[in-house]
Amino acid sequence: MHLYLKYVWILFKSQTQYRLSFWMLALGQALTPLTVFAGLYFMFAQFGQVKGWSFYEAALCYAIIGLSFALAETFARGFDMFSTLVTSGDFDRLLVRPRSTILQVLGSRFEFARLGRMLQSLIVLIWSLNKLPLALTAPKLFTLTLMIVCGMLIFTGIFIATASLSFWTIQGLEVANVFTDGGREMAKYPLSIYEKWVAYFFTFVIPLGCVNYLPLLYVLGRTSGSNILYMLSPLAGIVFFLPCLFMWHIGVRHYRSTGS
Image 1 (tube, rainbow, N blue to C red):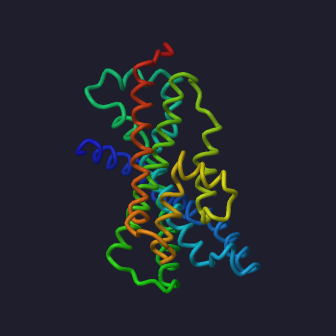
Image 2: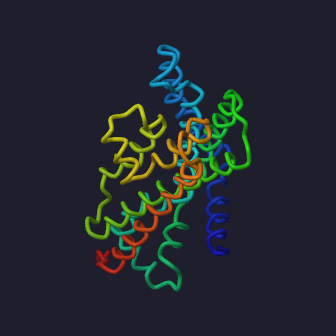
């Protein structure tokens, strides 16, 4: 953990050397998702509600997923850009160092300008919670925190699984964007508005529905069964994350240097 925090501090200092450029980039990252949020607003302004979901309920869903993805992009960006280490042969150097390859790849790149997206999602989260008639009890606050953390683990797991494929394909696969950027955009809306096969896929294969839809039903007081199951459903993110780590270790064992 000490080494990881040192990576964070060193890269943060390097990225803030030109402060105006850094803050302008962070501002741009905060404003860019507003186009998606504006689309959400205008859709609900036109139709009033979508399959029983109000604008503020959808905004809460949007904020949770946006915050989870921004955290994953900020702190797991090394895996998203991992294929460059394979093609350049730089991964060979990571193998001879007496530290975990996962830790080294995590620490190889941070995108602190993504904090702008994080701030924008946090503002929408607080605003939507204030607009909704909710009693924020300790269990509900715990559930919201679990949704954000486990959502970050799911997106990080997708980054790791995609990076693992680079051991065989060398170049990164653009099809992975279907599950990262595509999954993010899909999960910004309640899962019940989609076709059943989409809902099943993003619940039992990539469990984004377990961090944005099922626990949200509990937070909003829409549950009809045991609340504990809805509260703990975000833990499916941990279940998804562990096989991604296993896939990474398999890839490392099968790595063949590019000879660069």
